[in-house]
Length: 96
Image (tube, rainbow, N blue to C red; front, top):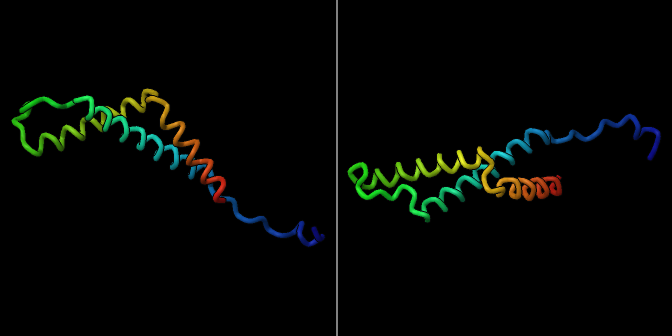
């Protein structure tokens, strides 16, 4: 280290708080998508002709399942979001 190095401006640090918030949001959405698929496989929303049937009913049933899964994640979920966040954060930290 030379005496001039003390006056060099440090390299700008990435905004880790914003990055971590984005990673946390992504991890929660991934867990919600996983849970929505599990709810679909469990048969949630499979009410034959509940609203008259048709393609629209299946589409809206998927929206309902996704919102129910998001509520589950908001209530603590199954811990998948935390594991995903930790893995994504470790990968992002190593990339910097």
